[in-house]
Each structure stands twice: as C-alpha cells, then as structure tokens.
Image (cartoon, rainbow, N blue to C red; front, side, top):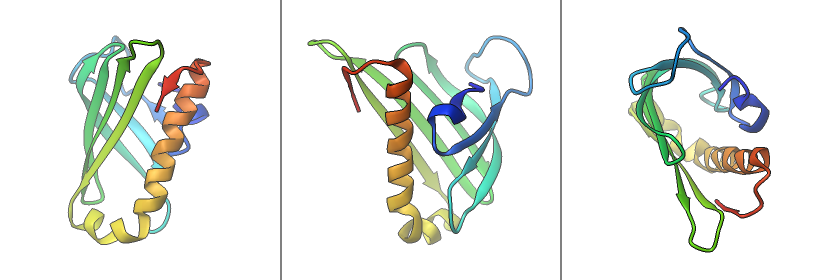
Amino acid sequence: MADWPAWSPLHLSVTRPDAGELTVGSAFDQRIQLGFPVGTTTERVTLAVLEPARRAAWEGAANGIRNCHLWSFTPLPEGGTRVRNTEVFVGLPAALVRPLAARRWNRDFQGAVDGLIRRTGNDRVDG
C-alpha cells in the first residue's frame, strides 16, 4: 500500500492508521492529487470488498464528495489478466467540477492501471 505513489499518478501517500491484516472494514488514509479545481485532498477510506487476486473496493468521503473505487482482475483464457479500475464520485461538488476535470481524471486513473501493469512486469495484462 505504501508504494502506491510509485505507480499511481494520483497518490501522494497511502498510510494505515492501524497495523494488522487488511480485511473488509479496514481503513487507510490516501492523499491524492485530483488537480484543478479539487486540488490535493486527504481522506480516510474503508475497504468494502476484498477478494485477493480478484477484487478490491473502498469508499470514503471528503470535501462534500463521496466516492467508491473498485479494482478488478480477471484471468484471460489465453493468459494474462484484464484489469479494471472504476471510480465513482457523487455529490454536488463532483457534479460541478466534472466538466472541468473528467478528461484529466480518466487519464490519471488509466495511468494508475498502466503503472500497476508496469509494476507487475506483466506484459500480458489487458487494461
């Protein structure tokens, strides 16, 4: 978790408030940079789904924006893995900034997928 900033262009830091095994209900703090007009924000998020090597999802809220983030990994029959990275923002501030930020957010979230693929060293990953 602490190495996310090495491969995710959005993350400046990720820390856990308590040690121990990650389980559904575990929390972590992520400091992310979403760019203008949202800027940099730190939020505590909670793991909602955790199926190792299949899916992980967390949810949180900061600055009037609720969000849910899902990573899913599906093995492909011919080898490799399909990686899906989905983020949902809800709230009036998200609706107001979406026209200004959607293109950049899509690029940055795709950058996180590409960074994870590079980090694994797997050239047979389908993003």
